[in-house]
Length: 170
Image (cartoon, rainbow, N blue to C red; front, side, top):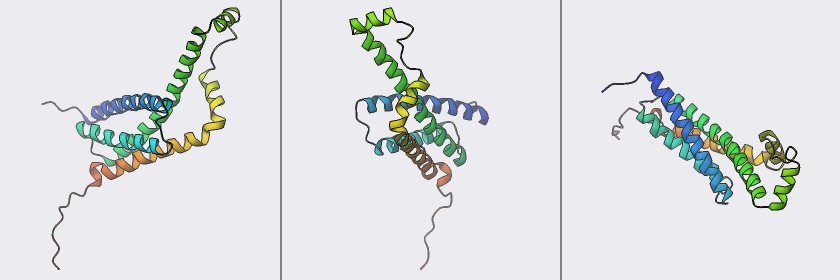
C-alpha cells in the first residue's frame, strides 16, 4: 500500500473539510428557512457536528496533530458561517426571480425598466439585513466556532493520554 506525503494528506483533508462546510451551510440555510433552527442550539449542534466529522476525517488521512485539528475545526466553522450568508443571498435572488415570473404586472414593469429593476447585490443584501441581525450573526458564529474548537480539543487524538492507568495501592 502506498502512503501519501503528509502535506498531501493535509491538503486533501482541507479540501474535504471545505466541501463539508459548504454542504453543511446549505443544510443549515434550508433548516433555518423552514424554521427548524433554534437560536443558540442550532449553531452549537453544527459546531459539534463539524468538530466530530472533522476529527473522523482527519483520522482517515492520518492527521493526528491536535493543533491542526483544532485550527481546521475553527476554520471550517468560519467557512460554514460565511457560506450560510452566500446561500441566503442565492435564495433571495431565486425568490426575487420567482416573484417576477409569477406576477404578470411585475413582468411588465421589468420589461419597461429592465435596468432599474434588479435584485440587490450581495453587499446591498448584507447591508439591508445587517442592522437587524448583526448581533445574532456574531453570536451564532462565535457559538459554532467555539463548540467546534471545544469538541476538537476534547476528542482529538492528542486529548487522550497514552499512559495506561495503573491501579493505585492504598
